[in-house]
Amino acid sequence: MRLQAMLCLLLLLIFELSSCTNLSVILGSTVELPCHSIQTEFTEAAITWKFNGKDITAQSPDSTKVKKDGLYLTISPVTAAHEGEYMCLVKDTDMEMIRTYQITVDASVRYIFKVTEGSNIHLPCYFPLSSQVEANALWFKETGVGRRMRLNTGDDSTGDSEKVEQLYPLDHDQTIILRQIVMEDAGTYTCESANRQKLSTVDIVVEVRPTLAPYSCGITTAWEPCQDENSRTGEPMLQESIAEFSMKLYSYLRQSQASSNLLFSPISISGVLSHLLLGARSDTRRAIERAVCVPHDFHCVHFQMMKLREKLSSSLQMASQIFYNPQMDLSESFTNQSIQFYEAEPIRLLETSEESTQMINSWVANKTNNKIQNLVDSVSPSTQLMLLNAVSFSGQWKVKFDQKPKKGLFTKLDGDMVKVPVLYHHKYLAAMAYVVELKAQVARFALTGDSSLYILLPRSNTVADLQQVEEKMTDTAVREMIEQMKTTPPQSIEVTLPQIKLDVQPDMNILIKKLGLSSLFEGADLCGLYTKERLVLDDARHRAFLALTEQGVEAGAVTTISFSRSFPSFSALRPFIMLLWSDQANVPLFIGRVTDP
Image (tube, rainbow, N blue to C red; front, side):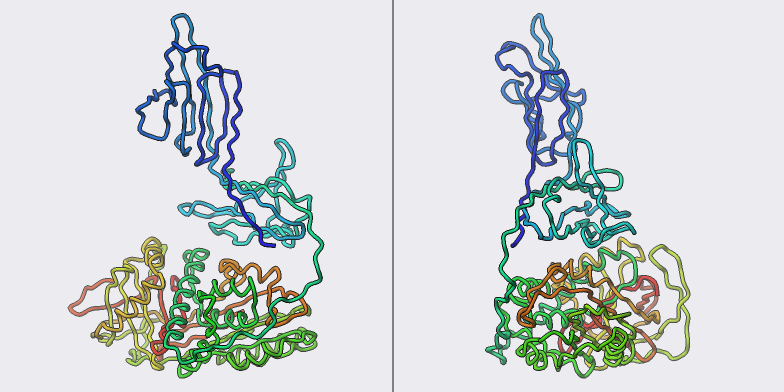
């Protein structure tokens, strides 16, 4: 059953005959304050409204309005600026009456969810994007009037991660998942910052679970064939999808890792999700298609992925593999199409965890030319399925750097300087331009294998300038930058690059949730792959390696500027962004950020 979320703004006003009324109102709502309870009582009296001691008139310009000769004061919409004391003063010839309201503004958002017993539910909560996230939000369940219980969200040793889990720790998105809902879970939940600012309120209504029929797959047929293999639109459609997917991944990763080194291979992550898509059906298929940015009716996605792998083969080795529990009977059509499109004949896991672990790590090391080893620590006996995609890239500089060892000072984001070995050439032939749309100095370094390394250098070593470039890195802006640099003629440039070796393992479990694929962890419809029961994703891994050396660029991945001289110079001795791009296939192979070499 699909959960439906209804966003409601609730306002409760309690009118009393006392001289002061305390009201808590919701941000963005409308509130109407009566001056007195009996409208005919003082018909000839003069009525004055004050807010925090200052007069409010009918001509007041903001959203606070006096109506009906002062009988009512309306505030719409309520903002944080409306918090304070409102006083209504009624003066007659021999009488004076004062009525006071003390208003506090609740800036949180309220949600109401109706869920069925046994379901999983996401409870939303968000820090303002302008804020700095230094600690996770606190979640509470109300247990009575003035009483509440704090939830253990899995961010400490007492957390019950099987029931409640913080999806994105230390992220602006503080959503939690509540699993296997029971009737006792009904009630009101609140999310607050560490300084007790309320961020959201969630009301859960639990309904009795209907009697379910035994599990059976719906669509079990093979992936529909590509009807037009010679179409001229299929290849550019996949190129655009991978570029959009790449920038979406970079956006998610930089949000969770604001200042550290980053590296990932979008082609590898796209490859493993596309392979999984081959067996996905119904809602799971649509979710994966949205995640990898391909249209729902793009039936040729697997055929085009095969053609892409063939086109990249001169510089990038790309391999997929499926390891599965020997007790499973994989669909014959899936197995055949897996071999056809991904050259991956599924392999049974071995009898012991140690044997399976060694087999998988050996496959990864082999496919990445030993750049990545020991990807997995162990394979659980309950593991049903493991999908892997490995890529390995090796490209030589078309223009060689000086072989003599040199050192330079790299300035980090905090201003600290570290001594690093550098690649240097006093007259390197490369294309360089200032890309206005990205606010970055960009240099393109040609590599063998019809590939290029692009380095984007922000205006300074500050976090603000780095983030400004990153915020402008949409897929459209990056593709336009690539086209601009391809038409920029090479020139002699003094180049200084740090020698680096990045070996980064981003959190793929969080990334998959950010991509809208939480259902993979809860029970996915993979009926094109296995029909007996729903499969649950236990773990996902991605690890990427990239080195800049005197010889060129080496990279591997697997999934589960100033001008001070008479001629231009390009010195990347401060934080920068890099893209390893296949000019032949017109897709990004690796994307990274260097803040600490």
